[in-house]
Structures are given as C-alpha cells and as structure tokens.
Length: 168
Image (cartoon, rainbow, N blue to C red):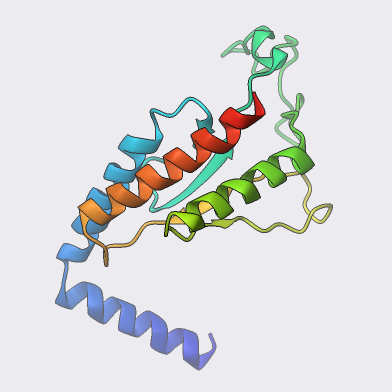
C-alpha cells in the first residue's frame, strides 16, 4: 500500500476512535436525505438504504413498466432461468444514455443555481461489461447538520421535479 494511503487510513481510524458519534450522525443524515428523495416519483435510487453514497437515476414514464414482472423462481420475465456463469443479464435494462445524461446535467445546473453542488457520476462508456445507468452521485457527510442535509435534499428534489417535469 502506498504510504499516503496508509497515513490517510490511519488518520481515518484515529478520527473514528476519538469521535465515534460521527457514524451515528452520518447514518441520521443519510436517513434524512433518503426520506426526502425516496418519495419523489421521478427519482430512482438503486443504492443500498444504509449507504452514504446515494446514486439518483431519472425515472421516466415508459411503456416498459407494462411488461410482465419477473418470476421469483425463474428470474426473468421471459420465463427462462438466469445464467449464473454469465455477467450479462438475460434481459438487460433498456435506457437512453444520451437523454438521461442531458437531463441529469440540467438537474446538476439547476441545483447549483440554488446553491447546492452535486455531480453526475462519470463513467467510461464502452469500457465496462454491462452499461451502467447514468446517475447523480450524492456523498452524504457527517460534517453537515441534519437540517442542512434536509435543505440540500429538498433543493435536489426540486431540481429533479423542475427538469423532468419540463420534459413531460
């Protein structure tokens, strides 16, 4: 391990030992942000509920939601079992990368106008085995108060509703 990473890891451990309340504050802030963003119709959150790194995807109304749902036993809507030896899904998710990236960039710019800085997740398209859906990445921190996190989440929510609402 490079020396700079060792020093950073050691310092992180020292901070957690000296102020263990940081983790509970981080969990509270994460729950507060998720409570606001989970209720928005035009946002999909694929991140784990406990993760302080939250990815936000655009949920567009589409005819794909009318497809039959996957069988829990067979693992796909077509009735064919999944192949555990393959990294590729049998029925890959269909999304418009260019449209979603443009909408997400508009959301980032709208949030910035309101004083909240967020960023789109950057990916090297064509370099991964399966394409990942474009998203905005939020990094929740314990350095902010719960009220500040709620205010920022409300700005992000408003930006999503405004940009995706214009598209309808």
